[in-house]
Image 1 (cartoon, helix red, strand yellow):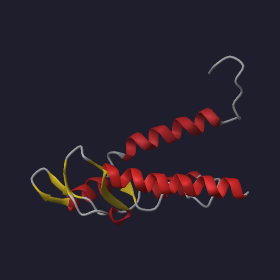
Image 2: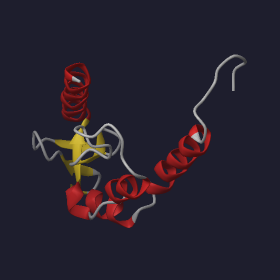
Image 3: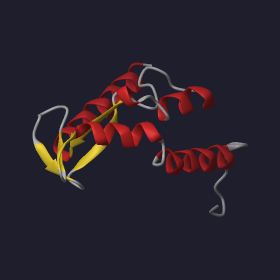
Image 4: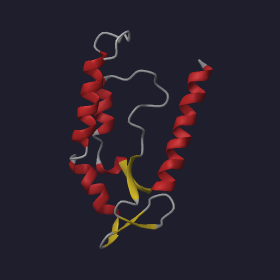
Length: 117
């Protein structure tokens, strides 16, 4: 931690736990199954939004429902874990442009909510 910076009590523990959960979520079986379901041919996957075909590395797996709810400022660790480790139907394969667009919309919604409070 940088000198002169103060963190809320427990902030380091929470950040550490979230980072560890994010890394571990890459091995979540439903995640692999969602990617497998999007496969249309050897090395080709269908984007759930634009329906284009993309090679491995040209798409991202997206949580259909954001892991951190846009409408809530705070979330419990149980809610976070339930959202992060969702069922196979909670994921979608999106090409990079579609994923960037969805992320931009969600981030704009967060800004609007924050500014309205």
